Amino acid sequence: MCLSDDPLPSCRLIDLEVKGDERGKLVALEADATVPFPVRRAYYVFATQPGVARGFHAHRRLKQLAVCVAGSCRMLLDDGADQGSVLLDNPAKALLIPPMVWHEVHDFSPDCVLLVLADDHYYEADYIRSVEEFRALAANG
Image 1: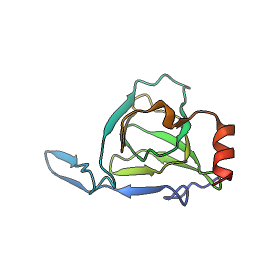
Image 2: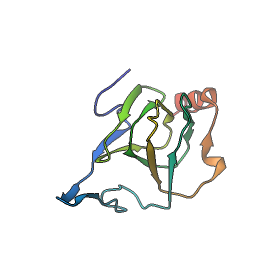
Image 3: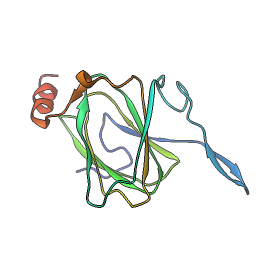
């Protein structure tokens, strides 16, 4: 299980530029700039109950960028060849999740707000919700 700054060869952490002064901080998320794809959807997860885990799926084509804008959570990742884990606890770091990466989100802090930007709208057919199906698809390339 990898715990480095790059949790898998297929995923990477992106440093976001923080601007600010004595009044506070600001991070701009811009499509095709700080976000390496056009953004078609944004959502955020908050008020997650203690002990609850989320995710448990992969996407066939969707690209995502996850930023923990408050609090922290741990992302478990599996691309079919490698497995890794990364703690998201810094609003100036974003996790790029390419297609065909199984992801689970665990260990939400009570104040966690996890923002996710995606390159397409929600399509249920893009989801792989069975880890067995994911592993079979990943093994076949």
